[in-house]
Length: 207
Image (tube, rainbow, N blue to C red; front, side, top):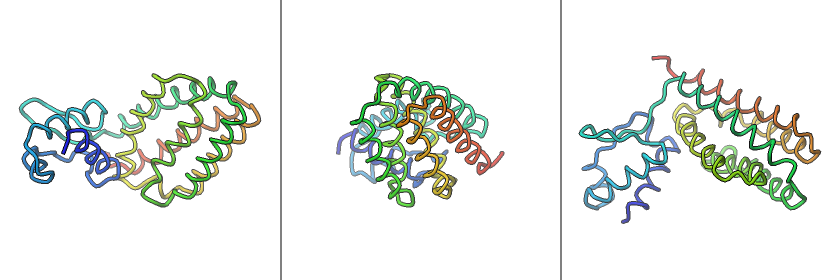
């Protein structure tokens, strides 16, 4: 089994909440699980470190990242800035084909809100919104920040319980985009992200 395949499996476990924030990732245990030597395990952990979901400390091993409430709030503040800017840049370039793609992923996302695929569906919707901006590097940054939030959302079971509001938010953002109401769309997105951040922070232990 390759390091890439191991990393993909572990990332799924992390983002789905199977491996919770702060979980120690012991190389010998992982090697036994995947029936490989420690070398591909070490490489897989380094790949996950680059993705920002694992911290690797020399001579101390690796752990799933564990953020404090203030750190989660900081990430959501960054997301509001980056994602709001990306959407503002995208709307002027949205054409009929873009709206059809966004509506398609929105319908699919709405069907997945109470399934294990909710996070992927949510990201696909936001990615479809931002892609017309052409801001590839900015979108990569957004995706990494979202992953850090997602593993905590999965651990504390927050947003999947807010599905009706989540669907309404997405549909409102889409409506404003189609009408080329840029500032209204950006404001709706920022409120959507800010409320998600507040919901997660409230669910997290304070110590």
